[in-house]
Length: 430
Ligand code: SAJ
Image 1 (cartoon, rainbow, N blue to C red):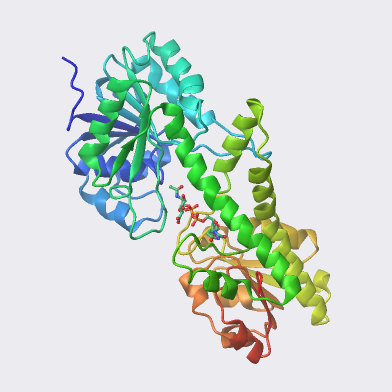
Image 2: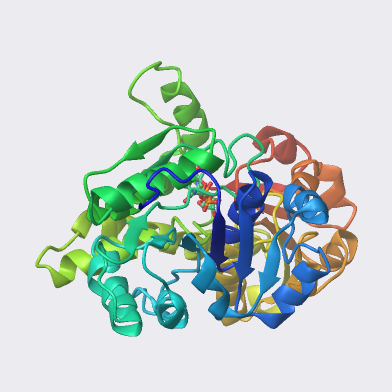
């Protein structure tokens, strides 16, 4: 008899990155036998040595005592009850969805899946990918029927790197499936490992739509304040103060903050999945596209501020050195995916400016291995990532390297303090 309410069993997690690894460790902690499968042998080697392949204190800790079984062998899915796919869903250079990793994972497991298994996709995709893209690959490769022989569900991941409050265990989830029994099995699996609320959606498409909607919501809100920042820089109004003022309204205002760009594997990527899918189905998301254009423009806007300030100080930009502080896409993590810092660096170099870079979390990609060395000989500095180490800097920390210009890409410094110290300060909208 089909066990629709299985609380414990064997689970495989495909893709052991920022999403898959915390999930695999959690399921193992909750008593599931968990096989972690990744096609990167280097990553599997690290995991076998109980080392985290990326910077994450909790993952490092949990790995030491976890029963997780890392492997590159996809055949191991055959004796699992649940298979969760957590591979990246990036976009191409021209911002089109790249379902390559999802296709490869589905093709790799299809020959080995068995009747009664539940297959869950956690990767962020546009509505329709599960039914129109993954389902045919699984049916073709297994000779079985989805919704009858095996079950297919979607529960979009909600990992927030660097967040100490919300984690894979306590963050609410939505789950959708092809049909009732698959939904039951998926709800049972997530109820057995999560402490958070789990909302059942009416369909796979609704579950897929939730994630792209929640992240497009964030992207358009950031674009809104980025546009305000560019407008207010003409009006001499400090946009951050205005946002703080608007935030005193206890209802129906959600603050977002302007910056030198929008990075990461979610916010600048997910809207393109919806834009592209809707386009193919006859609708043009003008608003989402415009928000993406505004956010994609912010690195160039930041470089404009640098060049203006260099000229103001009588420096020839082509003979200047600028120190870019920060390469990660957000504070105190080592993830550089879609980071605006690289756009800023490219724009500066295209304008003939020499660029020093330093990121304490990404020294391997920095031109200099210390903050001091990166600042030495520079005329200007751009703060691109609000790392704690940078936020603690004072005007003196810049002046002692004779830096006379600071462009604060994350509005973390006190404008008044820097101006008082005789430094040209340019914030984003302040
Ligand atoms: N950013 C701004 N202004 C803001 C907020 C963010 O410019 O007001 C920039 C950040 O500097 C960064 C990018 O946007 O470059 C993305 O920042 P993020 O805080 O959204 O960080 P992410 O990409 O890790 O987003 C995750 C997402 N979580 C999932 O997709 C599961 C997102 O849905 C969350 O809303 C977000 O964390 C969060 O709330 O921190």
